[in-house]
Length: 343
Image 1 (spheres, rainbow, N blue to C red):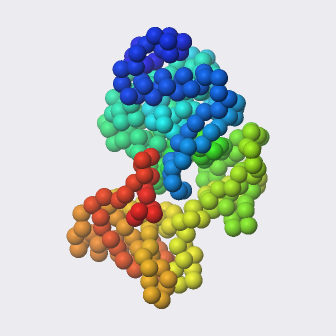
Image 2 (image 1 turned 60 degrees about the horizontal axis):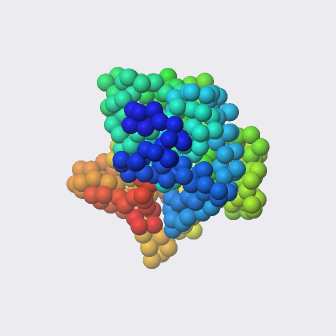
Image 3 (image 1 turned 90 degrees about the vertical axis):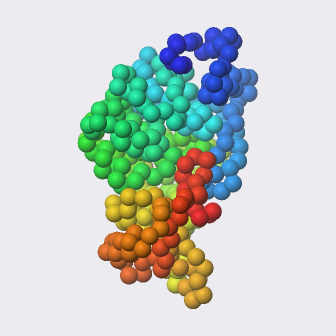
């Protein structure tokens, strides 16, 4: 589906003139996918460094799409919702899944208000956490809109604890995916709600993981040129197919000789702070670096004192931030994630 009009892929490429930027991106990718090149070019998100463009073999990308089709048991003519940017790997894979699975692709803007969910049902959709939170906020009753999606894959950033709690009241089967551009989206899935929900990611077929000497996740899977693929994600392993993420190695803060994972501290605070926030650091003469809490919003004494009390109750003695800073807006990357380096 494209703007409520059913169009074949062949007709779209040859005859239909794109009318919006979204349609241009969609048509351009179809032309790239059906070109004679054996690879596609994809922009990385820049969450672990400077954004770059990499090349992925089409067969490698197609195999990722097939794993998703098989896992979620998607069949010909199933309707799936595409509401992700087409510049990044997650958006491109939604198109490839539709092409290989002969699915009914419903394409909409990432910034949509999702009002169409009142009248349409979908077998599968992929979203970022902010989109899911937006839907829940717009619902008059829990699940009024989101329950129109049978299976939902969340990715792109970590899922806030508050959102994960809210999804426990939804009948939609919700999954968190772990992956990156280099792996052509998720290589492992974690059930968020309902039967089988747990805190561990489980690798998909023919994929395994191990840890580097520094405790970072490494991925082995068919099609990777150099294996295992190193990551900067600190992880804990149950076995070679089961793991959980502790944080990023390049985000670790060393204060007073102690290593702190900002992500782990943030998880402790998430249930108690409603505003966007993150743990960061500032140079310190004796500690090397000192932990700080940066919160998005308007500064006032009452808010700062309340945040101090929350930190005092929820964090350990050495985990306490030495300063609390309130900023009008926290810097973000193009994909919506916090820009920790700029912060």
